[in-house]
Image 1 (cartoon, helix red, strand yellow):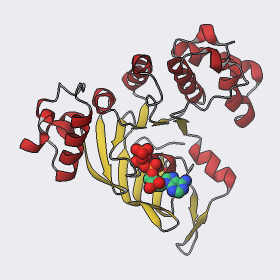
Image 2: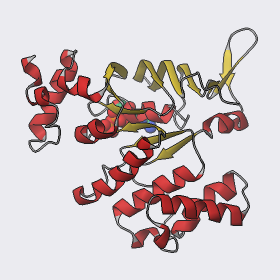
Image 3: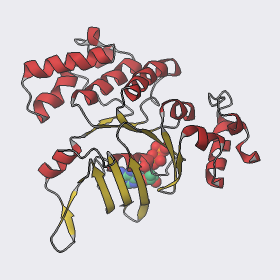
Image 4: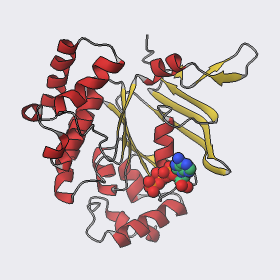
Length: 278
Ligand SMILES: Nc1ncnc2c1ncn2[C@@H]1O[C@H](COP(=O)(O)OP(=O)(O)OP(=O)(O)O)[C@@H](O)[C@H]1O
């Protein structure tokens, strides 16, 4: 049973190293139910690693990740030490989180409908007819019911990503983790995916996203977390973060981003145009 008073997702002092490269250091973030939180930051700051630690696709080695109050990946022993949890326990906790990948990760040899039903029948043991019914419902939700019998290669990138979102929705997750969901798309295909994500946000789906698109982050997020060097440096509503950045590091990041994206869509945030003038 889930406890509604706890954050949906909670990361406390999370650390992660690849060999001697300490990629996450004392990473702290709480995500409330119904909230959309976006991770931004320079390349290599640990955004994707943090996101993947949120469902144990990457095994964190310090701190704790809780989904709906349940510790993910480890179990605490009577003497207070911890050990890796069983695969079954890990699967049970991570079942509340579904991932949407940058490159869609659809199975190319399977029709759209089978891409969506496979996790339901193979992982959740759902009956094929029930799985199909649910798959059609979520495909309809992303406007792709008519493409159920197509193969991924017959779809545009935007449509493929909407199938990726439908596949994640089909498992009825409590939180969706999205790793740069629009960055593999041609610019003209971004909006259709953005619209689906915005409609999920309106329905209060809890979402954590990694993006390099500041305009996108501004449009969909309740809060934006700026990461650098494996930590959250600053976190707040986009209006505040983009117009009134506190840390010099975030100001420098926004300056660089703006200089590379002259036709940016952050115009709504007036002072972002010259964040260094604060
Ligand atoms: N599987 C891995 N093995 C070894 N090092 C890794 C692995 N995945 C990531 N790293 C390293 O961890 C650091 C953080 O990578 P990560 O992908 O989390 O950053 P990011 O902020 O998402 O970057 P980008 O914006 O470029 O996608 C980088 O130095 C990267 O090289």
